[in-house]
Amino acid sequence: MSAVADTGTVARGRLDLKRTAPTTNRLDRQRFHWGSVPLLAPAAVLLVVLFLAPVAYSFYLGLTNLELIGPTSRHYQFTGIDNINYLIHDVVFHQSLYLTAFFVIGSGVIGAAGIGLALALAMQKALNSARLLVGAIVMVCFMLPPITAAILWYAASTSGGSLPTLFGTSSSDFLHSAPMVVVSAANAWSVTGLAMILFAAALRNIPGEIIEAAELENSNGVQRFVRITLPLLKPTIVTTILLITLLSLANFTLVYLMTGGGPGNATMILPVYSYQQSFTFSHLAYGALVGNVMVIIATIFSALFVYFSRERRQRED
Amino acid sequence: MSTTALEATAPGAGRIEVRPRRVTSGKTISNLVLLGFGVLFAAPLLWLLFASVDSHAGATLQWPHFTLSNFSGAASSQNMQALLNSFYISLIATIISTVPAALAAYVFSRHHIPFKGPLLLFILMLAGVPVTIMIVPVYQEFTQLNYLSLVPAAIFLGVTSLPFEIWIIKNFIDAVPADLEEAARLERAKTHHVLMRVVVPVALPGIAAAAIFGFINAWGNFLIPLVLMPDPSQAPSPVALFGYFGGNGIHYGEVAAYSIIYSVPIVILYLTMSRLFAGGFAQSGAIRG
Image (cartoon, rainbow over all chains, first blue to last red; front, top):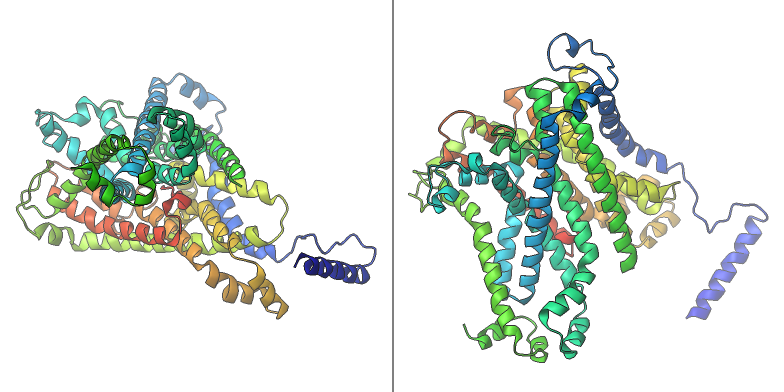
């Protein structure tokens, strides 16, 4: 079989030599075709005009005195680092950074990824019926559009809602007494499904022989988890956490409907602050600057995600 | 609950025989953990179902006084128009994202272009950047061009799905052997014939999955229509749902009913998409806007 294939390639090689004698155009190397250009053009144009250009434009707008209404809505000008100076000393922005970190780490990393991992591990040993039922419920929570998730959790935590009633204080409004906890729980509830399904898939890929070998060595469950399962899951854990960070960072809808950033500024995460500055207080330029901060943060996490998922794929190959 | 019952119904019974008996306590704990979380996750969903058919619906989870009036109330002409607007927006966004994504994905999968690897990684990185949050520059661009309406907003929503759709479709085309195309080329088929008659049919599941992703992404977005579509008659369902929360006294029954009408199509589309991926969602790594 291989001999036949070999003679085949040799024969073809000779043929090529005859045809294209001493040129550098080797036929076994792929070359650029002009036919690629029209196929790439639509995507390239759309991405440049409506993705990259707005990002670049936003970095410029952040350094101007543009307003939504009033004289500077039309005749705005470059004001240098004035906005950045204001940003550095803006107490609400500092609070917003802290709240965003709390939201992302608390609800995304600890909440969603933690619960997702616990569910995926429990699913391995659970009854088939329990696994299918709970898996379906958690996935539906993930599939629901953000505004629906926001409505469910608004109803559950507002005064007269299920949560206050459950804790025996039905008239109290949890969106006032513990707003950050409630919006974080809501976010965790809506993204856990993604973590669960990614972890479940990774757990299925762990070969049973390794676990069985460890069992023969008289290891206990904790040892097997810490020494085998966790190290093998680590690449998936890293990429899942980064993915969930990106999802949580962008969850404007949930927080905006439930609290609007309030009460006070108690839930003013960055996307809501950017929106509020731009369209409620009409400081478009400053809103753009806050948006730029967020895009820089997201780009860093996204680049990390690309790096780690590539590394994981290379290890699997 | 006896342990024998657990083992009898568990899948892959052959593997369990090998294992020591003590894992059964682990199994009980696993089932309890799973069911405990199941109740926590199900409670808000249960409220949605019960409130939608409850004539006395409030914010608390309670057994419904059955009625269908919430659904007839939620199906007001204004709300149905919003649903239709959502459909238009999502349809435009899907077409705007999927057709260019499929063409680009084909080039990335089959052709040789300079800097292909870095370009692909850059596109994957773009897929993670939540550009919808950076609404100000797009608002400013569209204001100057007098574009603040449904179609331009929908096109922008489509572009936000474009990077990830390129990846979805590229992965599908990668899995298709190139022999078919080479055979077609040997028969002197034109490039567009190769694309339409050979590549598209075999890559169709991937294109469909990408299209569904684009549709879901546009259907769920609230911020873009809120800012880029000031005309109330063009408002899609998320904006209509948000409208229920403006004044005092929220009509929870109607909100729940309309939420269901608005959300069910998306859940169905997600299930369709998971069918298209052989390995389930894990490969899709779905990202929402």
